Image (cartoon, rainbow over all chains, first blue to last red; front, side):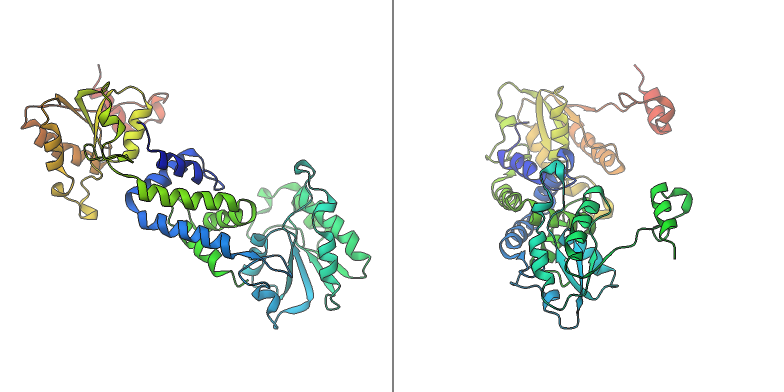
Length: 196
Length: 196
């Protein structure tokens, strides 16, 4: 079949979504055209509006539609606590726990030598400026527990300690609900070392 | 986090895609905003253009940007063969085999009592009109081998046989590359009955 150009272009564009290969993209395109053209229009508009409106908060760099995000402006938040995460979606995960009432700083990156991102490229200077507000007492490093995230946390910790700030890291340990025999050995070793 | 409204709306719209739940939609939205805003714009445009431009072929009802699709207009196609499929994506699968050189008729549906689609709703009249062109000799029923597809094929076969047309059905049998011990018993039984 000589597939219509607009259909082929739609499949190609859908493939840019993470986790979507050519088969899923094709299924999505056929589904939208056949069963949900209104959904396609809604999605097109949502995409455009999100890209047009969503920007980075001037204080914490997370996604927001205002110059400064609602979290940064919330007077009920504990301004002495600052949680450093890699991405807005990491922040979203922290928020969903409902266990944290401090503020955030979103790095929008991490040290990754393979991608050419070195210690100088992750906005350490921006973070230093942010913590110099006279309110922050403790910085909680919540970068990922991957090689890149650990390296990022290490670099940030060194820089922050020169400011006399308390620097903490999320605890490593056995995930809730897991059975020991299925947990990887590195995790068990860390949980043993950090026992309380 | 009070998530920006435009971001929440994007996640909600992405969930309309088949196979995309709230977690995938969220991942897609964050990915587009953080790493690929240009991809989001391209996708928005592709969606709008596809919905605006793609229509159903007047002859075979598949997706096309012209009134009549390229396949129907192709003089190299064997006009004596007509393959009936349920959807444009089924037609696409047939085409990718490169084993068929006839024409198509896309039902854009199938008998499905649960969805309130009865024998009168699947365009039998349109198909009857299509096969009355004096060229079609054989109609190959390539509806799916599901309950609904089989019922559809049965109804179509009965209607087509009154016109003195040869009506065939795709062969049922053991899929290529499969091992007998893992093939379901109904398939083996069919393959045995239709042995050649």
